[in-house]
Length: 434
Image (cartoon, rainbow, N blue to C red; front, side, top):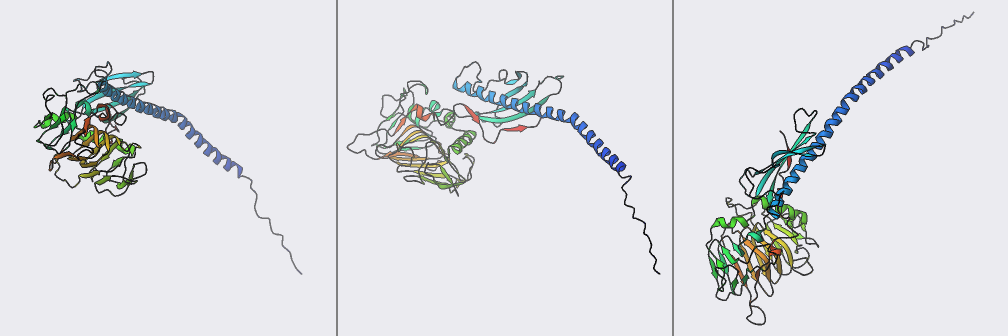
């Protein structure tokens, strides 16, 4: 006989679960509500602080730009009511003495302008603090941001130079060379007609076959040679770019694609712009793609990218630049702009260079045919191991001599290529803590 046993069903009911789940959900929702409630209180404060901080930074930048404008205005338009004169007045006038300048209801700035702590007379240090809504104590929630940077005057060398060929060392003028410093600028942008043909710190040797060295200076208008030699070294300072000025000019050349220094391969592209690569310091501009150069600010740097300084003894970093043939990308075959060489420069040929030629060491120039520099030539002869040498080939068709270095105020001023007045020194503009 078999027996069957009925098994009791398993306990699978879910009664009693709903209440704990509801309680857990309520706890979670309560936590979230508390968190959102706290955020609702703190987020507006954080957003307000961020807004005030951003406004203060914008106001600080406005103050900096205002000071830069006033410094430039003081140079471009001397005596202008809102310009800041150069040299810098002591103490600076308001508002550049720390007076608060309000801009509407948002806030304002406090800006101070000082001479360069390092002693460079062409540099100013600008500090601007933006405040919102005010810098006054008791104005409620306030924010401020501080920016500081150095700006440098890029002087108009054509206005300052007392010569068309200025050599801070020895000068040799060879056969068939001719120099003319007469100023024909009708606008008076470069002053009167009072320049020497050549102006040297050292000696000036002139070959018997050289043509007239002409100028408008009263001491030499009657003679065939208008020269000033043995001049004090300090007299060259007003028409010399400072270290900060050279750095600012490098930045202009970089923007133009005509900076040749560390990172340059030695060749240019079809537009005359620098191609990246390994840089040796030896640069040649001549005929054909790969060796031509565009108009503008052309800067050829040392191998380490450091500006040459009389206190430096290492001459291995000097750039060595050669210009010959027809190296300029301009359809005319000539050059317009500024050529700056942190080293030595050798020019030979019949091209026209219209602008400023500024050489930190020495220059050798041998013109042929209609070759000429129309503008201004300045050499610093910083090592002065060799004299700056100027010579020319006999002109074709007879003994007529044509001037090969001619003063041209507008071209030498770098107009269209170098901004007038003060510019920012690259790498100096940053936000500062209190």
